[in-house]
Image 1 (spheres, one colour):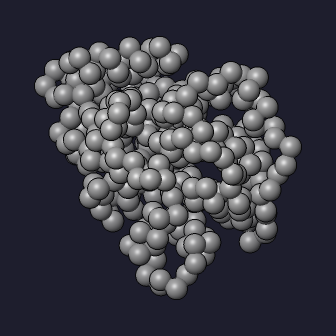
Image 2 (tube, one colour):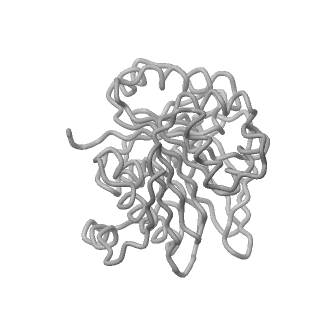
Image 3 (cartoon, helix red, strand yellow):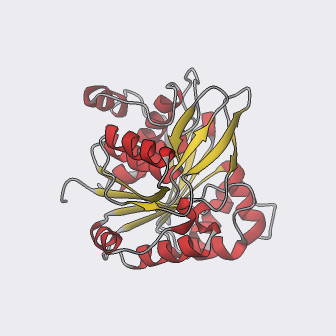
Length: 310
């Protein structure tokens, strides 16, 4: 396998305005940063305005060791932003501004080049809310090299999705990752029999869209991974939660990092849960970690994931 693995976060780039601060975010951006932390080449493919927030976003991306070569600049639309409120358990609620720069992603020669060398592309449903970005993302995904891994990290936000859009994105994906709450929302849209439990819903989703893997994250209760032949559950890890923003993106990045290297589902489950659990003990979606600390974290002593054959 060639190194480094090129992992692209494709879609929104925005500032999260929290009660006490603002922080750079957007699921694709968080994913790219976490891929970099894991030793891969994480790349942000998005768009900012030609404004102060856009300049600051690029400065932050650069300071994090990520290239800004694939961040487009828009002279007509402002840099994206979202208001974020945290409930007592630290779970965020987002109010996302519309008609901003990342709603107008454009196909360029630079993006054509990037799409052809990407090993992994992670995308969500949010940037599909505008025709311009939806068309550009579709083109990017269809232009990838044979064997590139496409991860649909659903990230359902507000009312910015429809059944038709989700179906298209499922069909483009190799792996789908969603929360347990999103699993039930998707199940009610696509799988009419509400009597099915979470595992059976995930199995039906995997079968319906011929996915390599369906991943359901359960917060502090761990995760469920379902492939065509295996089911792996992780009970979660007990940690002191500081901030849950970015934990899901960390999980996705670690899942991708392990999956492309042919790790077993049990090992993928353990590593991704450990990485996400560490992120929630930090403040902010993009905490820094030393390589030695990372190796110790991912090589933890106990492996509580449970695997069974389908």
